[in-house]
Image (cartoon, rainbow, N blue to C red):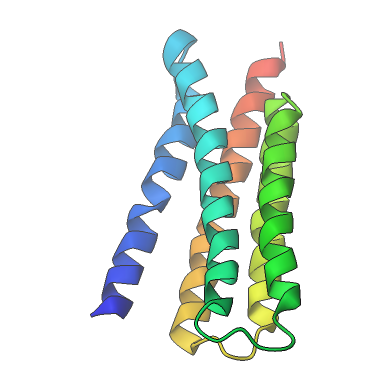
Length: 145
């Protein structure tokens, strides 16, 4: 049951990425600004949430060697916030995209991950990265006269 719930929530979690990136590509004025801010804020929130899951994994039984996960968890949150503080939407989107990829890379190195979870996280991250590219293309198209 929880595996299916996680998969459903993962897929549902892609919807704001897709809607906001399409909004940046096709909307104007207030809806464009809302799409842009929503995308970046949502990407930051998801990256922080995923970073927090690393911290949460250490709680049941803190063990030696989990210090790296705690540091990565905190580091990814700080990285996401700093990306937003650039106040440059294109740079922020590219940095957040790199943060998502880096976190996935780190998670794939962990030995205790279930195969289904690793596969799910991989394709969810792949789609999230595609939406970051769509967002970036949308911003670039608007900046070109």
